[in-house]
Amino acid sequence: MNKNKKTYQTARLSAIPNMASAVSKKISLFQQQHRKVVEDATLFFSTYPDEINQLKKLKKKLNAYEHQIDIIVKYKKEHGHLPAIAGQKSSEKYLDQLYRYEQHDKKQFQTLRQNMIAQQTKRYENIDHLTDNMLDLLNNQRIFSQFLGTIVLSTPLPDEKIRCVRNEKFKPIYIAGLMVALFEEIRITHGFKNRYLTQAMEDMFTDPTASFMDIELNNLSNEEMAAYREEVLKPIAKAALLLWIGSYSPEVEEIFAGDRYRLLTPDERSLLVSTIKEKSMMYLKSGIGIPPKRFNTHQEKIDYTEYEKAKLDFMLSFFNEEDPSNVELQRLMKIPVVYSSFMVSTKPDFDYRRIYDAYDTIKKSAVDGELDSQYSKLFLAMVGRFPLGSGVYFLNPETGSIEQAIVSSLYPDNPHSPICKQITRRQLKSMTQQEIIIPPANNIFFETARQLSGYDDEYFKLKYQGSFVWNANEVWEVQIPALDFWKKDGTRKVCTAPPPIDD
Image 1 (cartoon, rainbow, N blue to C red):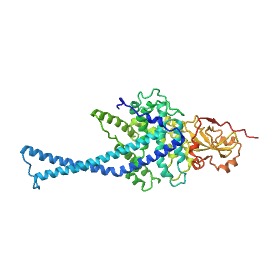
Image 2: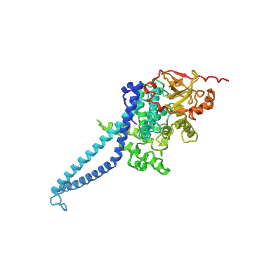
Image 3: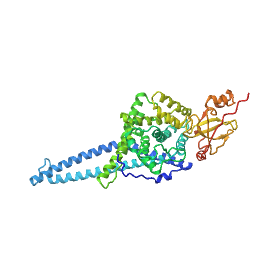
Image 4: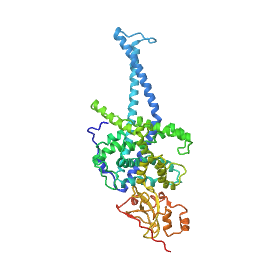
């Protein structure tokens, strides 16, 4: 990959939003952009095969015309006159006719090819703009937490008919965010052996341990961050966004049989997975590919093609499980995919309490060898046991009341002690800009906390009916405005131990 004299645009880095309202608007924007990507893909899958066949037919006809014209012209040069042509009264008229046919089909060929290039450029630009907007919201822990939390809190309620459709659109964006964040954790703590990554990140960072995922301040310089985004983070995010783009192909729609969310048989599921991967790779190679560009010299074209092909091959690595050099990337991708199946589920039957099982599921899968143990450990430390955007009940030692809170930040110091925004006080709506850290001793999710709370079993049975968590989506933007919730003053308070139980 030729990186000589490569320069990067750093201007947009200074315009990354830092206000809650601006971040929410950004999320709405790239949700719209993702819909365009899906529309682009749907059109591509329906038209590309016919367009390619038409190009091949036109090319075959042009080659035939050229061959006949060459024979006739060569004969005239050798003999001084046109040859007699079977079935043709006038060889001259026949030659003129060949020229006209050739020009007509050449024009058709060029028009079709130019239209296909224009559509390819549009597809490339749409996914590129979407990725840029997403990466703006992966610039530090605070913005990243709001980015992922807003997605989770905006998902429809379990019984809403549009839930599967909406979550299907949320999921690629959610996975892409998690993949980029997990990649950053792995880069700093373990590193990667992938050839593209080692070459791309060689001498990229002044301090290789510096991260863009600090709480507030990004420790990377604008130059470092711009290079990192362009060479590494954007290809990773694009691969994640296009992971299931093949599901919009006619071949996959046929497997769905009119219902994208129905329960498939094992054979159908196996065929679905292989077909989606095949069509997603096809879209990445032919639908996106290497964007066309004008060059001043032939060497510029060679350098550009080599550079873009290296990035394209890297993105394709996420789909190619047969190449052993891609193992790291497959392991990286698998964890966010599993986690997203809980947080933005597209299953017709869904109980929101399942999201609290995600932590244990990934932990067990790592022990069983289904997920990478080191990567899983980093991921679980990032997301914690209680998912961002989930509802928590806790005993407030200041009032002795059991209050409600919503998990508001990632990267808890202890995965069992979520960082939250308290939304009730004495069980009435109340919210400040301070975050609270809720240890297990105060979180009634844990049986020990319930035993220490001073409330008897009958109270918990009547009040909570066996569910010691709650669905924060029910109050989101109804009782809890996003603008108020995401306002943080940067301070955090740890809940102290619950008051002693009176004898």
